[in-house]
Amino acid sequence: MIEGTPGGELVVSGDERSATVTGLANGKRYSFTVTAETEAGRGPASAASNEVLVAGAPGTPPDLVVRSYDRALLVNWGPAEANGGPIDGYRVTARSESGESRTVTVSGAHRQAQVESLTNGVPYTVEVVAFGVAGESEPAVAEPVAPARVDSASLRAKARQRQGRFRVRVALTVGAAEAVRARAGGLIKVGRRNYPLAPWSGNLKASKAKQVTLKPKRAADAREIARVLRGGGPLAKKVRAKVRVAFEDEAGYKLRKRARVLLR
Image (cartoon, one colour):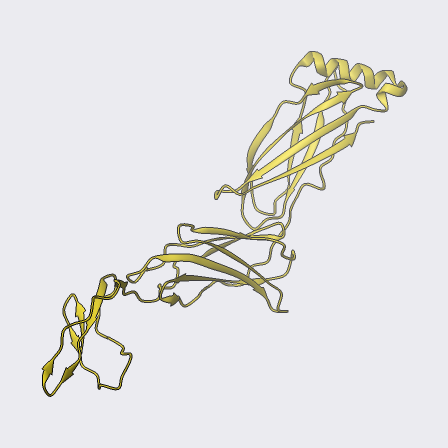
């Protein structure tokens, strides 16, 4: 006879050496003793076993959201139902129709993972599975999403001289599925001297290009750069703009781009 603590008994035949005890409550710990019983009566109980936590497989992770980035997908989800046991982790898999797949595993405390090294323009189906001591959940599955490039390759600059002013024109192109906030800045390098540009920041709509004008922070710097450009010569041919652009979405994912432009 097998007796569980807290209460409950199970009787099996004398030639059995194992038994499955059912009807237990998830989230509780149980220990067990075994007693032999014959026609002559019941013998003493064995020493109690170690305590065992009874748990079911985790529930399917809820609230699955997938965002598209350059060669990557950012995946968010809600906490899965534990069903009595700790959730050890989550396994996130992105799989294309051709069979290409990438998997990321994070701890049970995480609600976000980034799957990288994907192919831009190729749709991936994302699955998230919770796993713990009692097994794995059913997967949460999102509609296919294709990574998209956040691109500032069209970054360009040119000098414009008007009433002593000098400007650098910067074109930003955002190709991500999500809208982002962008910050732009940089400097103008003339010989060994660096002239900082006044920074710009603003919100960019998904897949919408925005023209941004940067100019030196100080009017005196603008006049000096314009003087060098008007004067010609070897130094004027080496005036460069170094521009940096940072993109950030609501989830805090960041992407930075840099460009160097020769000003003529």
